[in-house]
Image 1 (tube, rainbow, N blue to C red):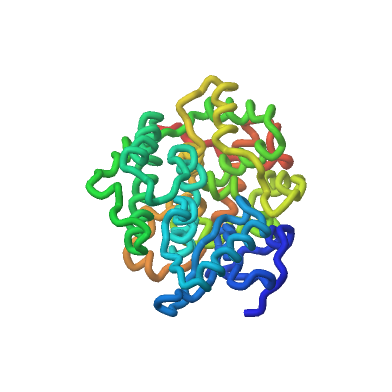
Image 2 (cartoon, rainbow, N blue to C red):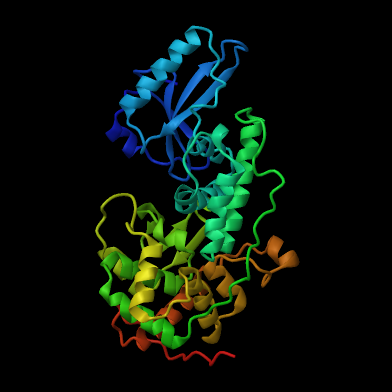
Length: 387
């Protein structure tokens, strides 16, 4: 593959590939390339032929947002000298936990890679020290996992444990370490399943408090409330995923690995069009920080952004939306359509989903007196009392 002279600016503009990872070689440093992953991650890698086995190998150098092209070229040149002297690059001292994760993540299918990257981004760096994989101890790993449990993040602790366990098994298979330090350690409990649904009064209080937030935060919150999308699907949304008045999520951006298409209701679509296009991402804030602010402002502490998804499904049911349409709206698979129908029914219910969102947004907007969405959508339906 012909190389190009990479610059930091050019690397930043390289688009994420569709389906499979892609490599862009550097014309200046032999063996150096940028690896592009479908999930949007970019990393410097070094391609070489092992001096002992003559087999082609690839070594991850580091993320492009953590080191510039000049530093990556310097590392590539040093590695070239070591290979020329007959030295093997099968060493672990320079392989950080982060680099090992990059190597492991790109080997997963796109939907799994996306889920792993979300866990890694939000929870691993904050709880596990970024040291070389061969220096990791069981105690250091358990301290980080126990911190999540102590914070009441049982599900996150469970996901983090499973990811680290799988990653370290990968490191054993690659001979980076001799033994997985988590071998023999039981996974933490997932904790009690959540069934929290915000009452009408609580939901209205949260939405009214959101009027004091930034425009981006208000629109993102409205999108979470109206569509029932998952937090990562909204907060990490990119402009190409908004096609006209439709949200089109590729499989690698959804939890279940199935692409998702939604015709957005008028109010939400209008608000999204008013946001400035600063870069590829639509939103630029931390969702948990926004949630914590809303908790303080409303005095309602025991709710999460994911509870808005459950609340949306519940309220749509109260408004008379059929269960299989609700599942189609939130891209969830629990059994409303099962058996042969689940295998052979490939109808997307696009029109029905669009109507459900119009009805739900209309009810929300009416309850707020038309103060939130840019276009008030009238709805004559009233939700049935829950219970």
